[in-house]
Length: 113
Image (cartoon, rainbow, N blue to C red; front, side, top):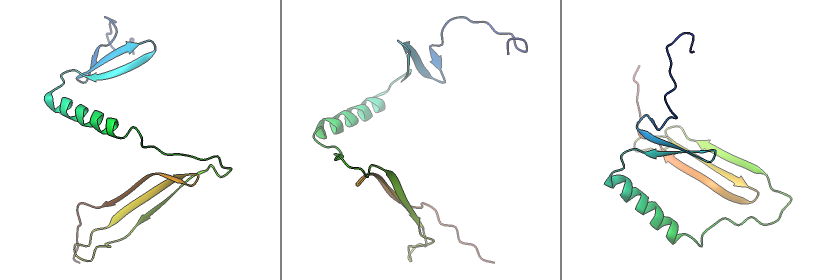
């Protein structure tokens, strides 16, 4: 690239796309350059949630059936009132579900021919 463009190396990068970039012992950390009260409110909410869920967790028992597998499903215009579809999935590690989702589409287009 230096052959095609005039380039100079001033110093290590500290800001990129409005995010503060720091390099600490082979780890790169990205942070907001200008945090606001909204960021603080979200951070407080996350910390309160984590504080209240310290005793929660997933427990995996010793088993020979320690496989990752999942299921997914869609319906086409499954809601009879608004004709919107629903997509859903669930993933297991062994016998324990660890993530799932069920989401109804936001927009439904109808076409007349």
